[in-house]
Length: 142
Image (tube, rainbow, N blue to C red; front, side, top):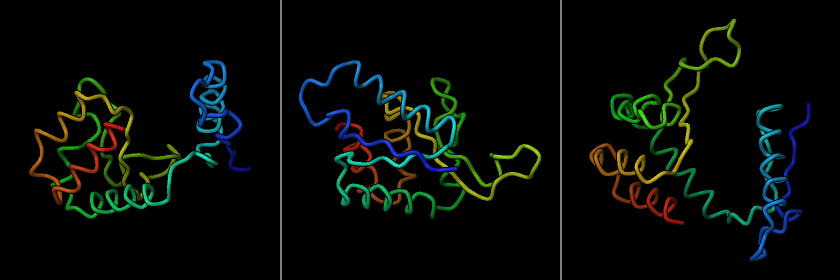
């Protein structure tokens, strides 16, 4: 099995007036890759390496927190989006005939402002640093 490659240059996303047809084709290609293979390599996205490193740093800080600090962010805690949030060890299983996977995850299914407000303003005490909160807010505002 090969990991599909989606090249964003093909869809001319850097141009100001990208057609709805091109965007629909791009979303279909990404959806197909995730639903049929589960992974996709995104090429020429325009996302700079420093942004990738910031996101990886935030992720590392979050996943290094003790479980009791991550628990308020658990998937299923939001009635408006039950798949959004942190998933603890052994809660998911890619193979239903085997025990739960030895991994954690954070499903980001939406960057809606109501979800951001719930997580980031009512739970400020759970953040490892003020920059953690600021970075997430910058991502949402972009």
